[in-house]
Image 1 (cartoon, one colour):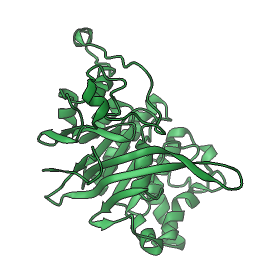
Image 2: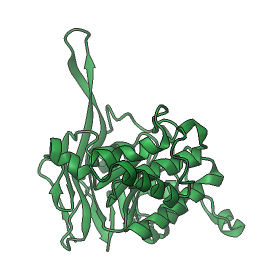
Image 3: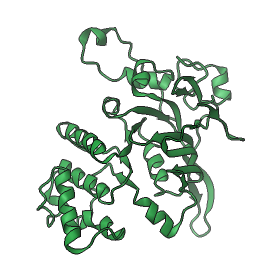
Length: 343
């Protein structure tokens, strides 16, 4: 594997793939939101740099965990991949097809292969629609079934996610949070997708329910050969479900590695700080660990720091960190990090 660079940019994190196993390839993805001023004649006065040159791949059948603090751009990345946001720049390829250039009917047909499970099960389901209508809508939109066959398909999906198949005439408010998220999972499965973006699907649920949803997602992945981008901020959950993990900070990916490698040998200071906060259920090991407390707040994505974006909070920072954005380099097989002083 090699690391490519894009002229005029730094730290693109562009991880090249030569073996053709990647189902999803994201290259130098940029998503900026314009800040405007004025009432009648608006003019742009700045931009929120939510995603700023992100690159990674997701292999078929795997789960890539994407972690980071709130506001780092994780959810925006997921939505931009599915073209729910039109990216400012960059490339997103799904099974070799460039998504950023698709429009209209071609994009609609491609969306059947890519779905999303949203974070808030209370806000993502239309309260005026029955469960049958919610799950059946994508089936109708993509002309997969109609009439009795559609109804049978909806009941089958409810059964697959662990709900009573005769709940089709009930409304979302009649279900608990965990049950609503199962309905959201059923809706995502309705069009038989290959790739699902799981946008913090358990963060709004009780701890007792979270494990059930995680187990359901793993079971469905094995049953339907699904590929996941699992977005979360809980590192314990990500470690359980992910094959590889990407760590994101202020719009950029700072480290990417196989799960075991990342948790046992983190190279980037930010990753080390995050992992030091994860409790270990062994008093002897826990007592010997050094907790890394980061100082200061996350800088604003409107005006990010020069050089390495983490240098304002990093205990290893030196002059070069404030001046030069570190390249995203493969320090070990399948282990990339963007740091001047890794390890």
